[in-house]
Length: 131
Image (tube, rainbow, N blue to C red):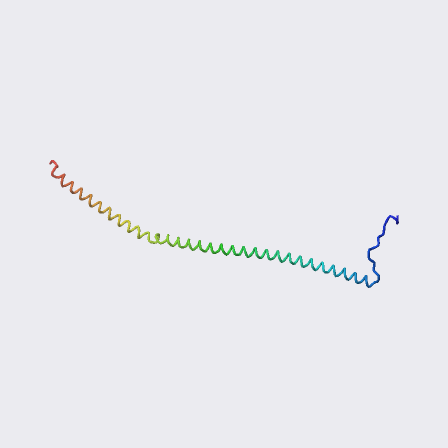
């Protein structure tokens, strides 16, 4: 059974314990270097992610500021319109009084002319009446 397992010898052999120690130190350095590179990659990815989030938040803030400006303009227009439309309502009683006085004058004039016509008809009717 022992013959079934083939033992392979490495392509390199260490000649001394100092070579082994140097090899272990080199392996440890490479491992540390790979860990540092991986940590830097993770940091870079996180930094890119944070920058994207910051840019997204900045864009949202800008859009909110534009909406705020639009809403302010809409409110100013609405206040102006309300002010313009309120002016006639404030003077509505005066307008009604002026309109009614104008209408009264027109109707009064019409009444007077009709009364004159009636008086004229009465005068022409008197001689025609049979007693």
